[in-house]
Image (tube, rainbow over all chains, first blue to last red; front, side, top):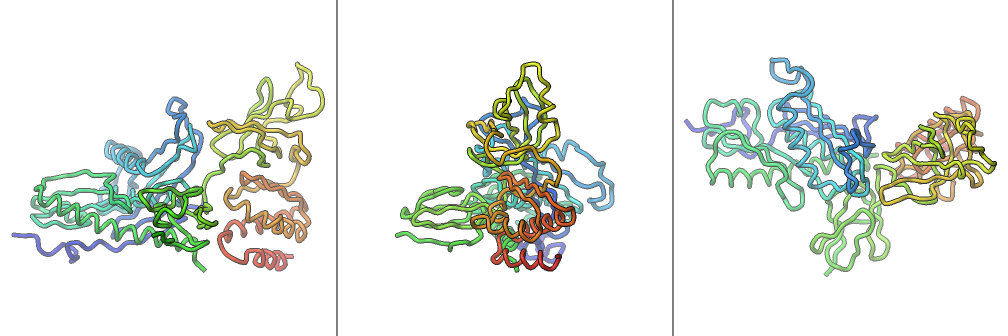
Length: 233
Length: 227
């Protein structure tokens, strides 16, 4: 059996409906909301602020610290234990390195920019939604950055390359690969690339080409949200 | 062949191309990559001749020499006070820069400025690592007593002050309050408490609408309605 029709009836390269909002957390220096299908991410940025413990300070530049967390009630059924776990630590780390490549904190030595991402509802693609939201929140906080970052998951479900997998596809009973990709907007440089499962070289190349087109669509949503925030009325 | 891709006062986002070709120069908050100039920050475009600049719409305060700021005393040391500037960097106020009178060696510095006091000061020096030195010895600089201190985004400060102080004098005149604006986004308002509240609301209104046209009219309407 070949996977020709997607579980939710989307086209192969079609993304789930997206929604983006800016400035939804008044107390934060910058904040953003990003919804992709049933996956929702809230990002809040604080800083640059004083960094403690002091040995982490870098006298040449400021650093960025990401905190990824899924809310206890976010999954489908099982309660997730609140607070950090091995998985959230790893995702925080990859978000960090993904965003680090575009931000420029050389004007703020010895400081930290904290990025908190919480997901109240998840349906696969959480790290991608988190990075997309965090990138908008950083821009809203006025952090100097070379470019925006948009992220999407691509992959192969039972021999068919698709974009933006949801949970049902990730859990499909066949050979499935899930590849979260984050790219800069202008040059389409990859800042995050991970993979679960198996994929052939040809399919991987096809999937990455699909990711470049998909991230461009996400970028347009991010761009519109950031511009609307300041041009409305 | 050079080509400008945006217009004056457009809202641009980080990574947005501003101009092609070598005829334009990258100014504040922009950078050149190959033969294009890109924005580095969320802000409004400012084209002055060949130079492209971005005025940020949000973001942290960057301390500059000569800026008048409002700070809060956080610690007392042997030779002066440590001052919270509302940014990632604290500042230092030396005893000799705080008062004109002679301070004896064994004197208790908390009698002059105590922890928690707010002060209006001017930045006299900033190092590359953003260590800040302050002075309180110039005219108009003093310790704050009474009134209330409001925090706003530092990028909105120029709008609160207005052209040649037009906005701030409007608020002063309509509310009868004394208003001192620090470049770091702290504003001190002193007057009758209901007037203080009106002034605070007006300032919050400016902060919210800062990027739009006709803010002065809105504020003057707001202050008249809530007379």
